[in-house]
Image (tube, rainbow over all chains, first blue to last red):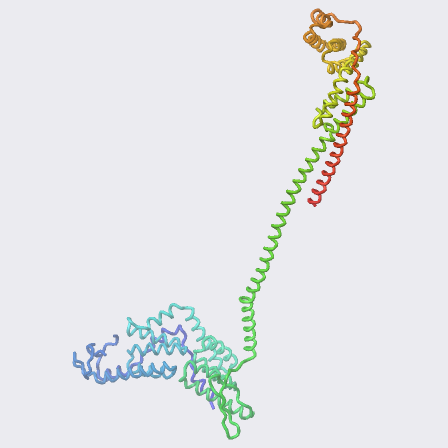
Length: 48
Length: 528
């Protein structure tokens, strides 16, 4: 049996087009390579 | 693959041949990222978009500079209706690699279609509003909004999921199932929708088992299954559900198709047939008209010919019957002849009749006519001249100068050898105060009759102006020879011939009149 309220909580508002800039700028999640290099103390080129 | 330290292309060794940096782990992470990308790509191809998103996010978690994974992620998100996340992935991708990046094309497409972007934005706002309604328990309003969003963008999965959930909440199991199935067409791996679908099907089965009926039809590609006792019966489906409105729409479509068929196929053919009939009739009427016109022309020509003929008969008739006609000449000649036969001494009447013939010039007459005329002229003229002379002188002596002038003029015309008539005619003019005419006649007398006894008197008047006041005295009449019996017989014969000729002329006149009447009647009939 599906709990409507619980399921409803899983729904979030969708980003509007005006929020695109904010969405782009707020992205800063590090990837595994970043973690590895930070552990090794190595700096590498980000852009190709 | 390039070295993270110096940027040189790496070989198969676990170290960089240029700078000697240890690249073993680096390579493994890169390979892992690429593997996740490949998985994501496979899942995207089989429409497992949720699975594709997971794999691609993992790929980016390993290597955030994996441009291919990022572009594909953006594409998959766009397909599921997540416009802004898709745009952000592409923008980041373009930031990582500026040139030769397919994200540039995606962004250009969206940038060039502002109306569509605005449409997407509207749908997102509607969804957010519907979510707000649902969170505030206004499920009806939420359903209305979500229906509108899903109708315009069936691939907007969030809206489809929310709508399906609300249907489940409202216990509209069939609608929930339908909605979930529609969403699963876009994203076959969407676990949420699969859960809702399973829930809806379960509820439907429970309901139908409880009512003891056969289950309703589900999907056209699927089979229905229901339990009957200890058996489970699976029955394949043929058609999908049809609502009343769809039936009406189908009927309307059928009517329109029929009307279109009639309009484009049947009607032109019938119009053409009618057109051909009209053309044939028109041709027939034209031919008839041409024929009638030709007949009319022919009849007009006939009318003209008959009118000419009638005119010809009219002319011929007038030659016979007119004042200058032959009939008139014959009448005058007969009158003269009869007058002469009855009283040979009465030359004046015969002469008058003969004078009329002279006026009409006696044309178109026979030889008998001419003979009789000549005979009468020769015998009557002289006597008539003497009678006119006698009558004229009597009037002169009585003082009736005008009467004298008339008679003496006739005398001179009938007998041009009479100097006496000429002299007394001149005297009559003189007495009538017409000196000029008198002078002229006196001169004529002097010139025409040099041996005349009246010449001296004429000269006396002209030279000295002496007038002759004596009474006119004329000489004894010259006896006219009696016509001999032969002449009399000839006269009678000529008279008979003239009479016969007149009868023939009368008959000819009648024939001419009849012919003219026929011609006039024919012309009249044709004109009607």
